[in-house]
Length: 275
Ligand SMILES: [Zn+2]
Image (cartoon, rainbow, N blue to C red; front, side):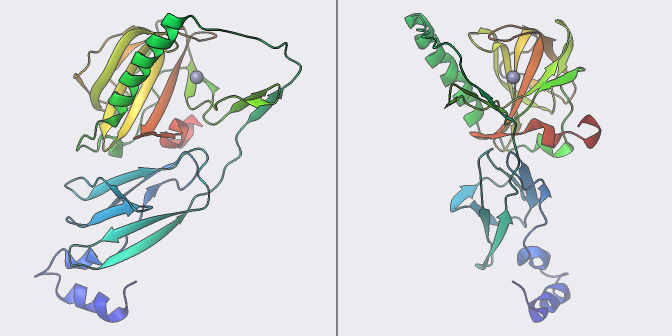
């Protein structure tokens, strides 16, 4: 933590050493320090950022981003290692949330054996999703904020979970938007298309957009896909249409946001009037 003396020193020497003004100040973080939340901040160029001991990518402008999983609890610690050799820690209390958990009991036992060709196909598809999300692009397209990717009502939320006959199913990590088949889907933020496929087994039409620094959007159950891998899209560009392809109960788009392999809540990224 800085004392009065070092603060005065920084201000007095601001003309000569511009970066010293903020070199000893932890950034004010934007976003939501909660389960499924994304936080970003701005540090002086040359600052290294670590989250829980792991290095976090910092954009050349000094912007960095982190995110918390649905089940993250307690305190997350950011460490700033400044170019002048000093370091500071910033403890973030990750606010817990209550997710909708539904118990369904008395279901007849179901033994479903997927055909072997499905297992092989899923392995390939999951690999493509993982690689698409693993790209670290030095861009910050998420900084402008996100758009709701289609007109329609929210029909499924991040974090909800069903417990069938006492067995917890994996939680739902998307924000579902129900709309008619053919309703346009927009890029929620700009970026590069890292995955575009028409017919994944569970997802149907799927698009993954890389917004930079490990932040990606995944959109699926699409009826049609209008973009190609490697293509650059701007926020609001049409990338395809709503469908019910893959394993879907009705036409909707399932929108997911990741920070690397951490699954975030897209609803927390939308302006408040959408809630
Ligand atoms: Zn969904």
